[in-house]
Every structure is written in structure tokens, then in C-alpha cells.
Image 1: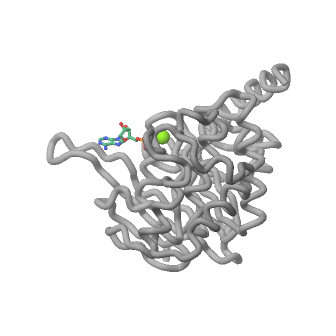
Image 2 (image 1 turned 90 degrees about the horizontal axis):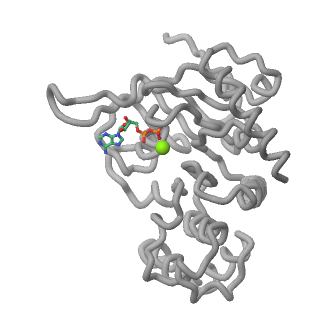
Length: 268
Ligand SMILES: Nc1ncnc2c1ncn2[C@@H]1O[C@H](COP(=O)(O)OP(=O)(O)O)[C@@H](O)[C@H]1O
Ligand SMILES: [Mg+2]
């Protein structure tokens, strides 16, 4: 038996479970291992942060879970169901990803309604137009946004549409990849509050990548720190607030985020 070092979710239902995830890019001598033995789990309804320096492998973990990368090794499961290496219909209904840059995730020549309708058609959902109106209201917009194109939206509105698109199939898990880092500071808090509300309202489970520990403190119950493709520390957000993380890298992040929070406070 492997010792269970991840006690945080022992008694709760595991929504996301990652065991010994390995992934390399490239072939033969040029092969680079990007994830090494990544293991953690996220309880049903929990919000879990994944932090670490740029290039440490955070997005890659999300892409494996979302089925956008399929050549990983290890064990992945969502909602108690082991994930295969193909992207199936069931997974789309269970887990959706929100990307850092809403410009990249929305087609420039598609209206909001069309972007939201597409997954409904693919998944043969009924009441399409009604669902589109409902999800727009849910993300703090309204049906008046249906005919807008992405360039006719503000950055915050664009990210709301991207979140609406992720939610329209009513998934249970959202994979959030730096969902506010492309936004103006003034809009970031608005989107974070929306995400916090949606999680409670819909009983969602979040796995959220960020390089900003103030975002983690605001939105996450626990977090894992990644460095060079490995998890170096898993901790409670409370531990973070008390300033007692063990790993040097985590302490550095805490320092950086505290000064960032001070800047935010001065800017507000
Ligand atoms: N498709 C790819 N092909 C080759 N290398 C990649 C690819 N995607 C990511 N990488 C590399 O994997 C590492 C981790 O990337 P990523 O998961 O995007 O990091 P993070 O999100 O933590 O910034 C980086 O070194 C990156 O250059
Ligand atoms: Mg990334």
C-alpha cells in the first residue's frame, strides 16, 4: 500500500482523482517529461487551486483531464469514472474547461447565441433557445447579448460568455485555467465573485490554475504547488493565510501574493 499523503478528501466523495500522472512531449532523445507522478484529488463541491511558476505543467494537467491531451500515463477519474484516452460524450457533460483568454475560446465570427447553441446541438439537447437565455442570465448577462460578436463585448463580458458556454451542458466539474489573468484588475474580482456564486448555486467542483495566490485565497479550499512537472506541496488555504507553508517555493509565492494584495488594496 502506498501511504496516503492526501488526507483532505478521505471522507468526502472524490470528484477528481489523479494518480501517478506522467506525460512527455516529443519522441526519443528529444522527449521532455512535462508531468512526473502527479497525484491529488478534489472532493465533490471543493475548489482546488493549482499554482506554480510558468511552465511548471499546470495547464497540461487540465488538458489531460479535459481530454485535450491523450498520451498520458497514470490513472485519472472524474466522478468515480476512470477516464479513457479518448474524448467521449459523457466526459463533455461531466467536465468543461474555461481558458485564460476568452478571445481564443470564442470564434470571432460567431454570435454569442451561436457559440452557446453549438454544444446543445452536438449533444442533442432540447429547449435550446430557452437554455441559452437562462445561461446568459446565470452569468450576469441577459438575452440582449445573443446577437453580439466577441469584439462587441468587453473583456469581462467575453469571459462571462466563455463561462456560459462551459456551463451550458450542466457539467459537474469546471477546469479553470487562469480565468481572470487576461482581464483588467477592476474586472477580475467581478468574475471571481461570479465563479464563487456559481459553485455554490450549482454544486460545482473547481480545479483552478492560477499564478496569483490572492485568487487562491479568495476562491480555493486547498491548493497544490507545482514545480517542474511535480507537485511539491499540497496545503490548506488556511495554512497559506497563516503563512506556514513548508516549501520554499510556496513561501515565495505567499510573499509575492501578499504584496500583490496590498497593491490591489491601494488600487481599489
Ligand atoms: N504541445 C506541447 N508540445 C511541447 N511542449 C509543450 C506542449 N505544451 C506544453 N509544453 C511544455 O510543457 C511544459 C508545461 O507547460 P504548461 O502546462 O503550459 O505550463 P503552465 O501552465 O504551468 O505554465 C512547458 O515546458 C511547455 O513548454
Ligand atoms: Mg498555463
